[in-house]
Image (cartoon, rainbow, N blue to C red; front, side, top):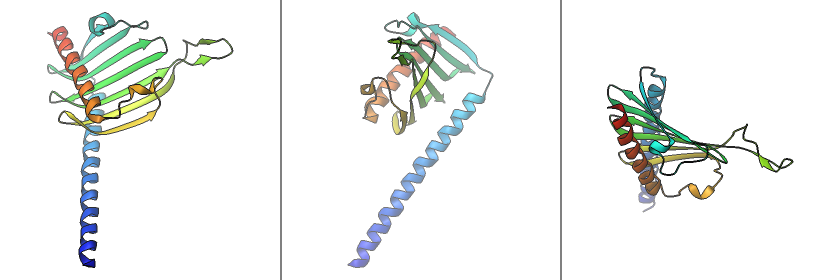
Length: 179
């Protein structure tokens, strides 16, 4: 009976190790694709300004850029200026499928002595990395803190749905601009 418990524990250990290795391999493959896309310089870039893609225009404006290679979008960069800082979200595609999203927020600091926000300096506040397989997030990595922490959604399924809907919409808008 004791041997059965030991075998079960070893089986669980090896299964867990194998799964972790598979996830690590997937992350490495995504990082390889990410680096390849970012190192390529032969893109046709199409850009939309704030009112062309934002549902609500922000006080700091916005820009959406699509990086095309052989008619396919490889990367989309969304940059949105807000009264408290800057949000940048990068969407990466391989064979027409979203595989990685990188999100960062930089905030303008509040200066107590002046009792106002310093709009000349941005301080990195948050980074989020979302790794996709198919149309599902299988790994997320966060560092820092958003100004509005409720914006970080605990459920990967909900965050995946949100990112996929936005990226699908942006793909459509940028493809119209490209053609």
